[in-house]
Length: 197
Image 1 (cartoon, rainbow, N blue to C red):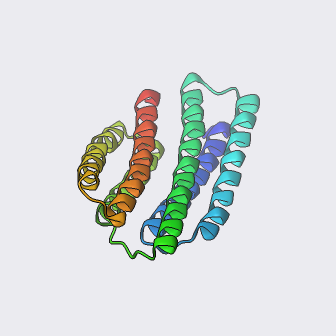
Image 2 (image 1 turned 45 degrees about the horizontal axis):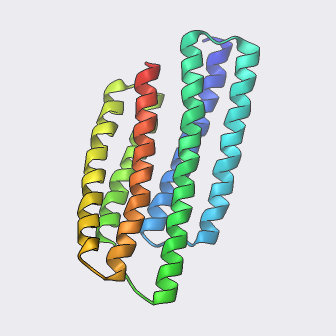
């Protein structure tokens, strides 16, 4: 194993940890187990890990003179770390919206679309990282395909919300829009993997 490979393995472990935290944040937000304040602490952790990944990548590039293939992987890791950070930021936005709307309105909402799609989105996040770590182009393509379900559910919720003045339908739609953005970031990661390989 080359010295650079040990450092890349360390980057991959950091990406796994950021992915785990990001998945947990999204799951907790949509299941209403998290407040904006509790999410912020986790986001700070993700941001610090992302910055550490960036510092490591710069050092690896300076010290080990990566090959073209290594360089593609390092650039993909850089992009993926940013994508995972965005996941957690979107989760904070969702948490803030949920907290404010339910607190002010007193509504107790059944987020039927968001609760179903959040599981799919977490699966996409996890799958995109697995595809990167395993250099699995087929898995990356499957992530891209999964986005169709997320988009279709968003369109269904949009149609329903346009026919309803119900605050819960509107809230469900708003959260679903954030989840759709997270899914799109998973597709972006999957496309990076396909390009890298």
